[in-house]
Image 1 (tube, one colour):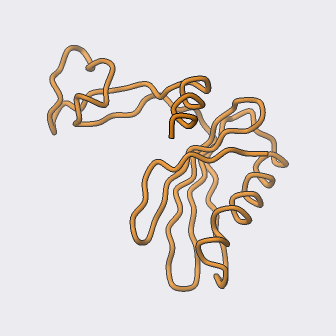
Image 2 (cartoon, helix red, strand yellow; image 1 turned 45 degrees about the vertical axis):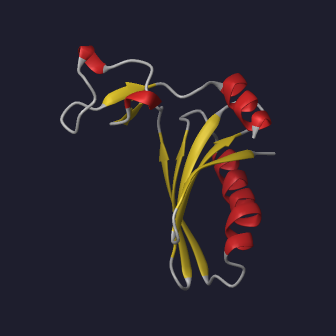
Image 3 (tube, one colour; image 1 turned 180 degrees about the vertical axis):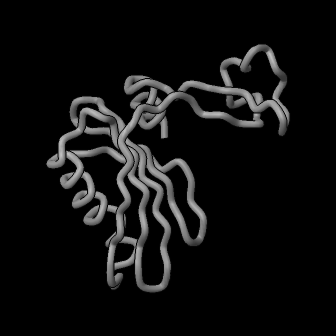
Length: 126
């Protein structure tokens, strides 16, 4: 079972944080075309092939097919690695600045994502 937290949405795309029952997190970026849905799926390096196939099937059933039930194909490119940080120009979104640099287009600031407990609290608050 996977939990999804939508991070962003546009008319043709969506981005999700995905958490499994063990608290391990992945990320999926979905891009909708008239006939095909493309996704970049970033998973932790310790996920097995079965874990990856399970999340792709669940993502297709719970997210993709609800948005586009008549799609012709769902193409997923999978990357494995670790999240290091999130960089943003918005100071209010960040916990600390890199090397004391102010937020600017040349020096974005870095924030660490909330852990599973903080994400659950945020989701419970709506």
